[in-house]
Amino acid sequence: MLESEFMRLALGAGIVIGVLAPAVGFFLVQRRQSLIGDGIGHVAFAGVAAGILLDVSPVLTALVAAVLGGVVIEVLRSRGGTAGDQALALVFYTGIALGVVLISTAGALNVDLFQYLFGSILTVTRTDLVVIAALGAVGLATVGLLYRALAAVVVDEEGARVAGVPIGGLNIAVAALAAVTVALSMRVVGILLVAALMVLPVSAAGRMAWSMRSTFVLAMAIGLGSSLVGLTISYYADLPPGGTIVLAAAVVFGTAVVVSAARGR
Amino acid sequence: MRVTPAVELDDVSFGYRPGQRVLEGVTLRLGEGEFVAVAGPNGGGKTTLVRLILGLERPGDGRALLFGEPAHRFSQRRTLGYLAQRFELGGDAPATVREVVSAGRLAAGGLIGPMRRRDRELVAEAIERVGLSERADAPLRTLSGGQQQRAFIAKALAGEPSLLVLDEPTTGVDAETQESLAALLDRLHSELGVTIVYVSHEFGAVERFVQRLVLVRRTIVFDGSPQELPGIWHDPSHVHA
Image 1 (cartoon, each protein chain N blue to C red):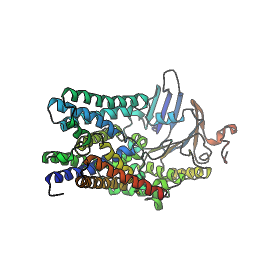
Image 2: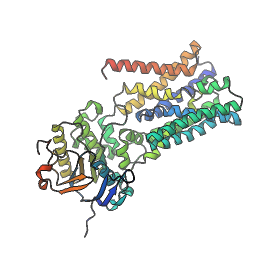
Image 3: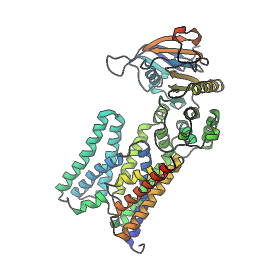
Image 4: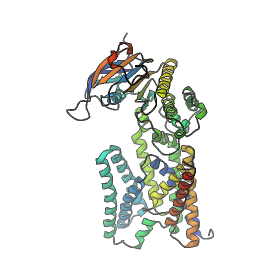
């Protein structure tokens, strides 16, 4: 498997995303915002469509759209209440509708679109890998530096707000990190499945770990393992890599649920 | 020389909607180092009073000051300790007592990077003060309700607060745990000299310890020593009534 360059590049991208997605997803899941990644994916789709229409790198336009969408979603979410909820739905559906219209205008409503919706890790180029590795490293470093602050907000947001912790800024940082993760993960698992890689490893880890930190580390290990196992199975069984990676994570989650139920947790 | 009160509300009125007053004409001064219970019926405006004191809401009329500064623009927020009405973990991850208490050190210790040694020492000290040293690395969800409450008090203490506000800290715990919590707060008040505002619809547990009792029902209907409280107003649900 490793003698093929496309697999080496795919494994490189899979390793970065396998670690980054759960690291960022950890804070979304803990704050009960598991579907935010999905919502950002919808907006990123509009970015991909704009890129195809304007003949600019779709990954770049998806990155810009995802970051803008993530920030808008966070601002609307922080307003709370029914109006906030409906505004979120508006952003989600406007994103996907705009994407369909733009991509239809570009005449690209065809198989090429599938690589963004479901991933195309086997077509990752060296340049793609450099971009994924560089932005992934920045994302992981940011999570590492802000881990303590983000974890404190998870533990007690109101207490942190009273003590003067800049909650709004930290929430925007999480939204931006989620957006970068979605944009980078497009090539690996696709827009439609990226949220799964941000959520499933974290949910599985939460059922097996004994502290917040161990949940965080275990989630990254499960994400990494799912990426490597999923890619290997997809190579030998000739299956779509994105779906196989997510199914591997789902199997770990299912096992964790059964084991934790058996242990009475 | 006039000593700056920890909390100063001057003729404060507040409503969440126009024309609907939750609080009206509230004037209250709490000195530094006081241990005060704020009580009243559910819906009487206690939590709103807490939010005004902490600067989370701005008065519709009147003014709210914290240590002499407008509460909503208070510059030393890291010196405020707060236990929200429903003290429960935000996430599903099994946070340990030490992780919960460490969260209380964030504002004072800095947002970025790992904790410094001094911060870790203060966290351990706060855990010890509430008697949870032996359970420091246990997941919070494996502790009893009273122990979880102590962990959140330790979290507030870890920030070395000048003002500690507890909003309905005894919700959902039995009378024995309420007594134990009240005794703990009394000890912390004596040892640390921190100003404590204890807000609850039932004040029987702290009645013996507080110097001052404030009853709120849209406005302040009683402000004085618990001994001066007319007998009919004592909390009938409590053994010390």
